[in-house]
Length: 251
Image 1 (cartoon, rainbow, N blue to C red):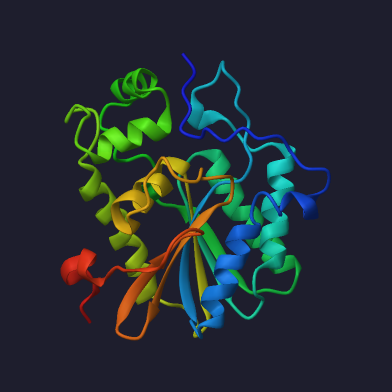
Image 2: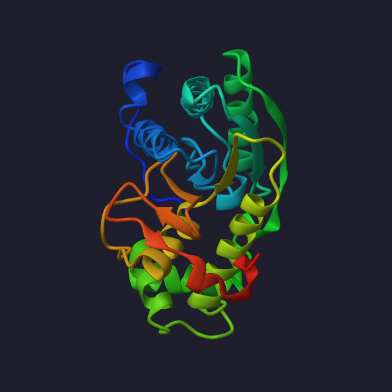
């Protein structure tokens, strides 16, 4: 049985610069739009770069492809250089390597960086029984319909944490990064999986999982503007996050 969290298997482009038109360009545009608002500190929740889909491996053990490594380096090289870059990642190798390579690309092109480290909150912590989740995903016809069923409360309670709770827990972790800056101008990169992005898009932004696919290096951005936190994706309008955080965002 093939175990895929990540379902976008589109082929590579002809050169790294052109590939970023497909993977990563929307995230760069999103970051630039947020920076243009005068935001000095933002958190980017991003899917990892292009990865292998070997059917004989557990999905979480599939690494980045050579193309994926180039894409991550190029993305880092093109991030705004006035921002200090700090990174976190889901523990699987492809997420950790994506974070490391984005940092390297940013640093090579003159940007300041700190370090990257694993963060369980960016993993698939919400899967309480991975085998039952895989079986449910196959029965539903794939990741996207399974996420929809999960959000609607139609999956077994012993398979998945409640979707609303999982989304808010991730949001709280991202919001805490905003509250703990290291520099006046900073970007926190949080590398995760497409399932997490589909979840937050649907629960927090009201963007159904059946909408645009979450591609490699696609992202959501969280930032403070005025008295509230906002989240935005590549699609739709930004949404207030303060009331979704409860007491966590009260300072």
